[in-house]
Image (cartoon, rainbow over all chains, first blue to last red):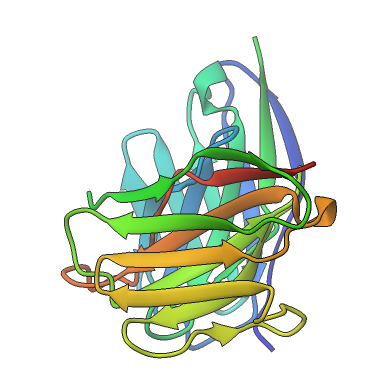
Length: 110
Length: 117
């Protein structure tokens, strides 16, 4: 069945880069996403990548997709304390049906 | 981006009462809405998928008589927790998908924290 896995915690120092990794199983995914959830709030789409792309860069965010290994990563450059949140990797499996990973809790130490 | 509003953001109720949570898409037509439950420090658990005008599809293990979902219009879906018990206390989040996005992006409500005493 469809599954998305990601590590649960990541701790970095302010100013360093953060890399959050994710693996997925459904090779037919059209889009893969990174959502951010701040405490007590809903999720917000950070960025997405189309499945025929290898990389997408958006300001401090870089998404890398290795379709052969079904591996997705999110790199946040110059991580700030305001980046502390839970980051969810997700894949679209058709229509609006989306499978979410368990979320990676990013702690940024000042 | 599109806006999804969820109401109420917090609700406290007595055991045995029913609670209704609303999810509205404010500036687009949400053909599909999803309801999730999130326990503290845990991921989203998909409860059900609702398409406008049809019955919701519930995930395995979710009691449809306990969690009533109505998606009567393209801008509103409601989740009613019937005869709530303390174990129903949780953070409930809705999301909506619809045109004009063609990327499958979901727009999330702010979440509703339910506390059952």
